[in-house]
Image 1 (cartoon, rainbow, N blue to C red):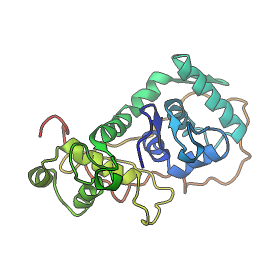
Image 2: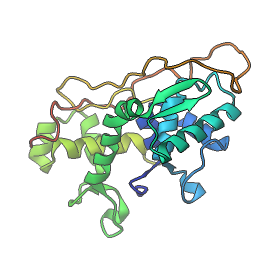
Image 3: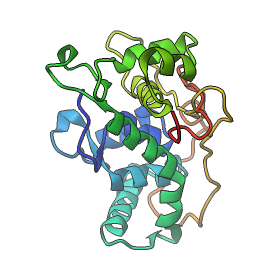
Image 4: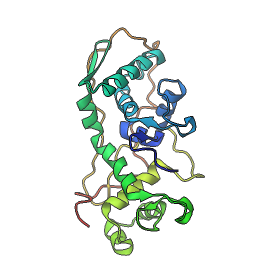
Length: 243
């Protein structure tokens, strides 16, 4: 797996940043609401799509696919024209608020890409810590086994930011052969020995208006309940500021 262009995100990255299960992102693509960027097989999406995923999170259960398609168009238009807000049939959401909510997780993804690399000449193209031959998955496995940032710094000369990049990469791109963790949502992503940084879903915004809605059915909580990822670690306080 190679990283998409800086303005594009894999399904796993988009789901992580927007705070949604992977399957919701796949369903929006399968329904033709979000169109993949580049080759269809890669399913890469753009930043405007990530903004849409973050906004539709609050409305998805109430909007029919045709309504979500209109909402996506409104978000994409607002993002392209650098509008201050998305206005959709009486629903108004300032884009600055959405970007502020996604800021930390977008930074996580960017730091992951900046600190890892994949080159055919190094370990057959396996992702490694940039400038080294240390596989990202090996670092993540060590963290899972209880290795602390101090131990990894001593034994592998890794910084907290490099360790965090390895852990996040392992969460977002499970090794082939591992059982899929369907519908799971990474609720927190932090390094050991610090206060956890948690993402919380925002409260409701605006009024729902007369747009294509879903027919009423018994509420389902299976796909929307935030759960902690089994591989999550804790973020070192002030990670990246010092070795």
